Length: 162
Image 1: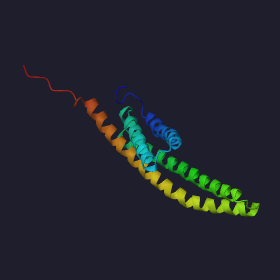
Image 2 (image 1 turned 30 degrees about the vertical axis):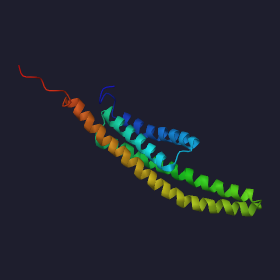
Image 3 (image 1 turned 120 degrees about the vertical axis):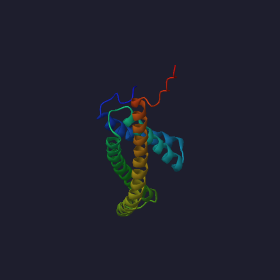
Image 4 (image 1 turned 60 degrees about the horizontal axis):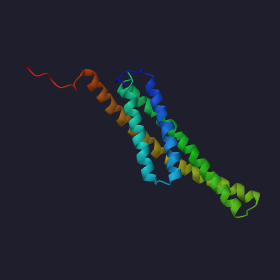
């Protein structure tokens, strides 16, 4: 595709597509038991690539791309928070059930797991927001610069004087 060939609104599809692609990659990485640092690096790369493509292939400016990726990063952070909180709550309930606790103890264990999960979810969401936004922003800036260079013809070699 040619640089700037898509409409301005398509940058939003790239921004929210980054969430979908990252969630799919996260599922695959969890099945392969890949470490957290590698997962963070893959997420960084996916958001950066989508940011680059979102500005390079659309008529959107760098600023419009950055706003789109800020919003998608916030949505991604909320999804991370919800998933982390639910995971910790379910883990607390399962631990109580495996210990053979009565219903009241199981509910208390689930509540404690949810409280711990809320704190962990906040930390995970903040880190996810920072990583995804910075990667998307850097991708948008690089994509905008590459699009400007491609459209201005600065990348073509000069003609030889005859």
